[in-house]
Image (cartoon, rainbow, N blue to C red; front, side, top):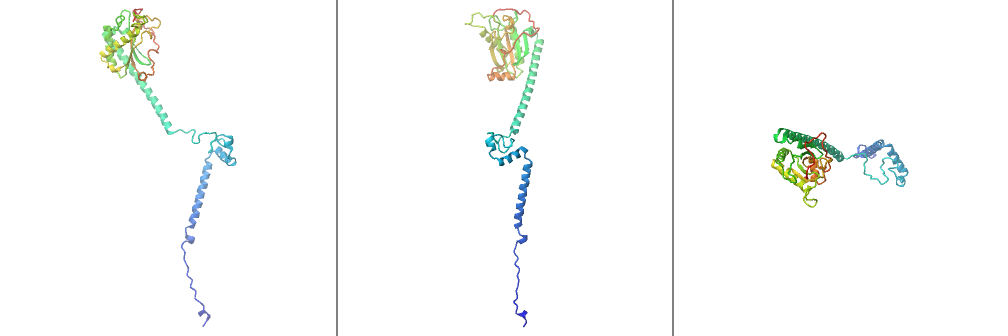
Length: 315
């Protein structure tokens, strides 16, 4: 028997293990590499987008972390820095505007434009009303003869209509609040015109500087001017004007003279009707003291010549 017959037979069985070169261990290493690269490029991007002063401040911070706290300042590099010194609010972003602030500015701008447009249209309405009343006076046989006693102008309060006395043609009986018949006709015609506008009105009664009989302790020009203003209000309402349109009725006696150079001039005895603009109306309602007749400068218009104007009796 040969040696080959006595040699043991060895059977090699190859054990196949899952993984190896084709396993998932390499994926972890690759993920770490990609993460590191992403962090590297992110760092490069941040460094590239940072201002030179910020970079200097960051560098100096790592060299001397206590520099800002010991020396003060906005940052180590004396520029906008992640480290703010001097007690300033770190959350404050100078130079930036909140969206709400921009919208508020736009709203304010629009509001000013709307107010300007409203004021312009209101001025146009007053001009139209003034022209309508002047036309009514011209076309009315009853009013045309009293044209020189009716003065119309536009003031800071609104459209002012003044009915003044003439020496031989007073509006009221002497020392009385009883209206003359022609004065009633004037006021009733004006009342019809005023009822066509939405604005409210103010009424003021005026006298000349002659002292009323009875002296300071009795019935005076104050009571007389107030009574005449209220009598005028009643005639305006009788002419068709809504009573709710009246916002103010006052008696000013001789405190606001039409002719300041001659306090006894009959032209100082008058009734003032003011169609109020929105601003004055709101100021009266809020009791803030509008620019009223008391504050306004009232002088005789240039070239105005009223026949027979002269000194008269009280009131």
